[in-house]
Structures are given as C-alpha cells and as structure tokens.
Length: 111
Length: 114
Image (cartoon, chains in turn orange, cyan):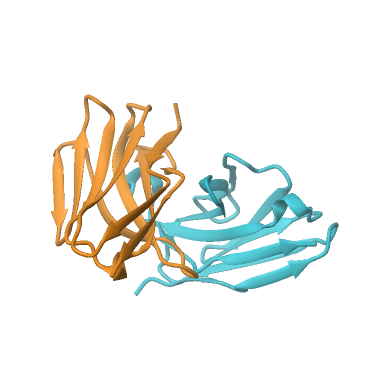
C-alpha cells in the first residue's frame, strides 16, 4: 500500500517535444503529490506539487495531471529542452506520513 | 535560500569500518531525513527525526543508526560498513511532517565500501 509506481524508467524526447511521466499510488490516505527533479551530482529539488482537490496544476512548461479515482498522476513537460535532461521522481505523502518516492525516470532531451 | 549541507561528497571506506555521515540544515526545520538512492529503486528512507533526540526507523534501517543532538544536525552512522552499503546517501529537511511541505535535499554523499 506504500508503493508508488513510476513509468517509464527512461525517456528520450526530441527538443520541442512533450515528455510524459506517469505515476500510480495505492494508499488512499496520500494527499500531497510532489515531483522532484535531480541533475547529475545534485540532490533532488522540488519541481511542482499538487493536492487532490484539483485535477491539474500548471507552472510554466510543467503540468501535473491528477486522477483521484484512478489513483494516478502524471508530469507533462511541454516544449522539452536539453536543459530538462535529468532524473524525475514522483512522490506521495499524507498527513503524518513520510513521502514515498517512485523509482525515477531518466529523461534525455536531444538537441 | 534553504541550505542542506552534507559534510562529504565522496567517501571510500573499508569493510567493517564505522562511518559517520553528517548533515546540517540552516532553516530551523523540525524534520530531517536520511535516504539512500540506488538505480531503479529511487529514494528509500533509512531514518528520520522530527525533533532533537527523537528518531524513527524508515523503510531500511538495518545496519544504520542516527543521532540528532542539535536541531540543525542529523548524523547517519554505519556501525560496521559492508559492501552492500555502497550507495548515494541523501539528507533532507522539512517543516512539520503534518504539513506535507517541500523537502530540501543536500547534494548527496557517494559512499563506496571496499
């Protein structure tokens, strides 16, 4: 019930394309869903987060789509750029619970 | 800017050694965490602390211990290092867990046990 599944494991996208990473969770007590971005040699940093009272949140080129009934959420990166090449982790957390992280997606954006 | 600082970027230790990984945060966060990161497994929680001298086991505490004597400092201890503890170790901090706020990570310590 604590697991967060993430796919794909790796993703290659052309510059200007759309990158889509999907996550699924099981624990219905989760109510906070952040995405973290990690560049080589750096620690993860918060990219964008959503709570289940909305179905979508957009910040610049990054959008989270959230489907509460399916217990799924996804990250969309529009107009992907080579500078977006990084590893992306989804996570889920709830009241009084620590975050559970997905296994990560390595994104490569080709110039 | 929030800063979480890990004392070493790279460490090489011998099997059986006692290893200390240090982490300091400057934002007066209540929560501090230690994760290990392995390819394909994501971030797995080793231990966390929500107050000075308080500690709780995460998902993979075996072979590790922690110490939090001051609010800003959280140490991870490998009592007797083994080769299967070769990994990237990440420290993080955040405000009260109940608020589910952003966790800030250090740059990581890549530990190799030979």
